[in-house]
Every structure is written in C-alpha cells, then in structure tokens.
Length: 264
Length: 157
Image (cartoon, rainbow over the protein chains, first blue to last red):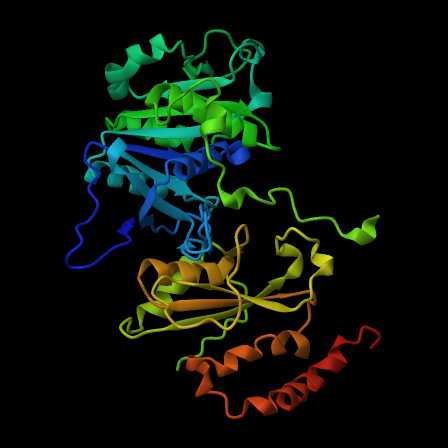
C-alpha cells in the first residue's frame, strides 16, 4: 500500500488526481525498471512515498539517484513513488523481484490504489523475450504497445499517428489453424495479468514493451524510454534524444568489480 | 534493551510475517533499532577488486529518523542489502522508526574472533555503551567463547 514520506499534521497527503502513473514490470532484462530509472533521474523527481508490500523481495540501499555527497545518504527501499506535479506525472519504481504466488495480490493492491488515488491512466513499461518472436515479428521494430479499451477511445488515434505497432495476439494452440487468438507476453512478468485486469476493471492502461534478451540492457532501456517520450513528451526530443537522458549514479559497476591485478 | 537473535534462515516469503510478529507486539514510540549482520566481501561492489580490500570491514545504512552518529562509513551505491536485515530496515524506514544497520563484510564462512571484533566500535555507541561491561576485556572474552567451538572446525577429526 502507498505510504507517504511526509506524515505530519501540516503536510497534506500527495494528490495524484488526474496524474499519469508510470511504472515498470519486472521483466526480461529489467528494461522497464532501467527506463524508469532514466525518467526519475533525468526529471529529478521527488520521492513522495513508499509502496509497502509483502509481494516483493526486500532490499535497501542508499539513494540511487544521488548527485552529490549531501543527497547520497537517503535510504531507499524496494518500491517507491516519485512525483512531478508540473507534468502531472507520478512514477512507481520497483527494485526487486516478485515473491512466488504474489503476482495477483500485487495487481489487486496496485489497481485498488490507482482507483482510490484517481490517477487518470497507467503506463506500464515492459519487455518480452526476443527469442519467442515469430517470423513476422523478427522484421521491423522491436517495440510494441497495448491499450485497454478505455484508453483506446482516448488515445487510439495518437498511436496511429505515431505509426506504432500493436502487440500481436498469437494462436492459443500453435500449429492449429482455426483457434482463438490470445495475448502472450513471455518474459513480461506481471504485464499480461495487470493488463487483463485493467481491461476488465475499466482502467485506462497502456503497455509499452520491447523485445529483448538478457545481457547489457542499457541500450534497450534507452530505446524504450525514447519510445515513451514520443508519446508523453517528457523531455524535448531533439536530434539525439538519447543524450538528454541522465544515467543515475547507481548504474555503476553493473557487470562486477574491478579486476584483481594478480590475474595478470 | 531488547535483544533479538535470529539464528535460522528466514525465507523471503516469510520475512514480512516475521516482521509483523516481532514488531507487532512492540511499542513503536521511542523505539530505536540496531541491526547487526554479516555478508561475504565478494558481494561488495567497488571500483577495485575485492581481493585488495582489507576485510572484515563494517558499513552502515540508516533510516531517515536515525539522527545519531554511526560508527563506520555508510554503504555506498551501488551496494544494496537483502534478506531479513533489509526487511527490518525497510519496515523502520516506512514507519519512521530510527534504525541503523551495521553490515560486516567478511571473507570467512565460519565464526571467528576477527569478524566479531569488526563490530567492536559499536560497543562505544550511545545505545550499546550501557550494555557492555568493559570493552577492553572484549578480546579476552571473545577468545574464551570461540576456543570451545574451534575444535569442531578441524576437518581431520
């Protein structure tokens, strides 16, 4: 559940009415989470609360977006909420994997919070296994989108103008010709569950995802965040939009420590 | 002062319930929490290689409400803490309880005096000062505790 950082008599609880909630799915390559890190770091968003839940593996560390000695000692936990009222943007960052059997309880808690805080819409950044693509998907853009029916009415036209590709449905039983088509997002974590639940509960949700594989997923994160920016225009997308995003200090040493000199 | 010793492994899907059980029956007003933990030095992320680091060493993490001085440097990014110590510290951060975690990075698996001595600076901290009878005697007392278990560490018996 959402717990605000500042709880005092004089400070009002943050108001997210009409805001866009941006959040990641814990998915292949952690691309959604990396993209969210870029958004929070670049827009210098303020932490406004925690999403305290028993559905995620616990972890703590010091401020991952620290820019100087002074702001480096603030403790961060596994799920936190950041806000930028000037852009009516609220961001939930998730930093650890889901505990077994906790997908559904988390989805329920999250959607219940979305409804009670009256967020206008939810944008979920996710990814899917590149090796599961079919022949057609191997060609062209690796980026896809999905809209719940309620959001389709509002922004469906915008996606067409942007020339975006909707995530294809696949045959429920591959190989059998006249079978139902279903949504299949391998490696997407809670993406499919959250999307289908949002559809049935009338929540305006968009899913933006990229086909990728595990490895150095920083380039994938940049591609996904630029894709998001085409629509939401969070930063000015000039000639080279990738150079506008600020890499957080916590992205250091992603692939291990320095080498021992004795190795050579 | 309440001492809670957790000597068994608490699985990730039980950590939340463990917290609720332990903290549920405690008064939060005026509460201060100190967490002591160890972990392998190989997990420590740094620009140099961990082989050149002098271990064991202590690093700390504290909640926003914890105002007292810590006995060692704070844990720098990109290092993180997991498992039960992280669960306890998260709980304290969210519910605004002053808490500090002292994590000892060590390169030995078995209990030894050197690793335990890394925690010695804590004996002079405000919270634990009243508990420790005489810190100067600590090395002697530690040796006494551990000689009894050392014979079991010999793999040739």
